[in-house]
Every structure is written in C-alpha cells, then in structure tokens.
Length: 347
Ligand code: TXA
Ligand code: MG
Image (cartoon, rainbow, N blue to C red):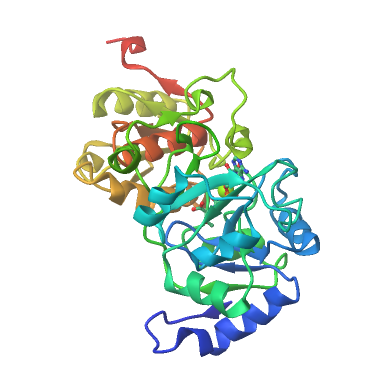
C-alpha cells in the first residue's frame, strides 16, 4: 500500500505515483482512488493486463469495464466517434462521476468491452487518479476494486481486505467523496439512456440534454439489462438484508421478532432515526436532509455489518429522487430485491 498526500505540490513526481505508473506500464494491476470508489486499474490497450483485473476480482468475463482517461484527446484511440449527444455531457460533467457508452474503437483490448462494439469511458475527478493516468500515459480500464459481489471499496483498507495478495498494490488517497459509482449513460442511441444511476443525478443530466430515458431493466426484473454488470448480485453483506418501508416502529417490530429467535440484529438507520432503535448494531449512514451523505457512507456501513457478524439486517428506504435514485438502486441490490412494502405490514 502506497500512501499519497494529494496536497503535495507535484503529485506526478511523487514516488508512489511513479512506481504505480511503472507497474501499469508493465501491464500489472494497481488499485487507486477516484472521487466515486476505488478502482482496480490496468492498461486498457492490453489483454494481458485486463485478464489480470478479471482474475483478481473474480469477475464474470461478460461484464465489461470502464476506461478512465485524463484528457478528452485520449478518446481518439478509444472510440470510433464521439456521438453528438455525448459532447454536451462531456462538457458539463467531465471530470466527474459520469461514464459515457460510445461506439468502440479498434485499439481497446477486446476483454475490456466483453466483446461489445461499444466502450464505456469516464474522466475521473480525483487528483490521484488523474495524475496516475497522465503519468502512466495509458488509458486505464478500472472496475471497482472489490471482490466481485462485495460492496465497492471507498477506502484503501476496503481494497486491502478484498484484494491483498491478488494485485500489485494500492495507492491510498484517503476515503472517496461521492461514495457510490459513476452514473453510466448510453449515448449510442437516439436518446441518452441511463444504464446505471450514480453520482450524477437524472435531474442534472436532464438540465443539460433534456429528457433522458432509463434502461427498463433497472425497474423490471425480467428484462436483460443493457449494462451487463447490473444483472449480477452485488454489494451484498453476508447476513440477509431486508429493506422496510414505513416507520421506525415497523422496523423495530421486525427487530424484536428476530431477537426472540436469538438472532444478532443490525439496523441500517439515519441520523434522524438511529436513537429510535433497540438492536444489537444500529448504524447511521447519514442524514435524510442530504442523501449525498448516505451515498458517501453506504458501502462502509454495509461492510461494517459483516465485521460484527450480525445474523440479519433491516434497513430504511429512501425517496428515489436526486442521489436517492443511486442509493435505492444499490440498497435494492444489497438486499437482493427483498423489500417489505408498507401495505404488507400487519398494522
Ligand atoms: O465510479 C465508477 O464507475 C467506478 C470507478 C472505479 O470509476 N467503476 C465502476 O466499475 O463502478 P464497475 O466495473 O464496477 O462497473 C462498470 C459498469 C458495469 O455495470 C458494466 O456492465 C457497465 O459499467 N459497462 C461497462 N462497459 C459497458 C458497455 N460497453 N455498455 C454498457 N455497460 C457497460
Ligand atoms: Mg463494481
């Protein structure tokens, strides 16, 4: 693990960045911070490097990776052309948590795109990520740096827990800011389509390109998603996790029931509600007044339940506007779709 102080004068010449850039040039894989979550980076132009990423994560080969750039000029070697609809999005949101799916270019390693004729690209807004991409001189394919199926890592310690011994190193740039992954949009069709909600909200996108559509698979279980990764079990804590609509009393009565069965019970709560619960482990993931705080802490909280070995977890739900859309998307996955709707509660 290399610790980097992102406030140093010349990030690119510090030893940690220089060493990791050299490893990347040798087609090794290195984890690094972005503003969303930590990524596991490798040379996007090398099949050998990309194969190492899939192996280290235990990731299914049909789930393509996002390519990270530090300048728009790098797109030339990665895409066939930049779609018209992508230009205002690049202008408005790069660098930042927006990934854009575009027609793929020939140079990108075929295992990056899992054989698709499109490629997903983003320019991260984190000084360490940018310095590493620039210093190595190569576009970096980088999925989240977790073992496949686990919550994405928001600290270098999370990466270390999952991948120690499996990768060349981790650049530690402190905890990430956004906390959930980038929004993935498809710009290859007539309308911009959200494939995965994330750090840029639907409302923000619509301010720039007008009405956007949402991949129907995101709300409809039966449908095959256009973003292959979306279909896999993801973000799941070890204990069964159930979301509960309604109020704190609804959750508390489920907690009480589980307790009488001798279970160790966890509750995913908020600043507003945490004092209302009597359970073995109550963790607040942020305040309802600002759902960005919830996004920021979400994965760390899910990992915390694993550490305490709870037997069962109940969690509150959130409104699905703004950052709430990404938060509820991740929570629904972590819960494997288990949600107790308000109308089903006994009282
Ligand atoms: O914030 C993020 O996006 C983080 C950081 C490290 O940049 N990365 C990340 O990567 O979340 P990953 O691999 O965990 O998720 C990539 C998502 C998956 O859902 C994948 O299926 C989708 O992007 N994706 C990649 N290429 C695609 C393509 N050509 N078409 C459609 N979806 C694609
Ligand atoms: Mg991931």
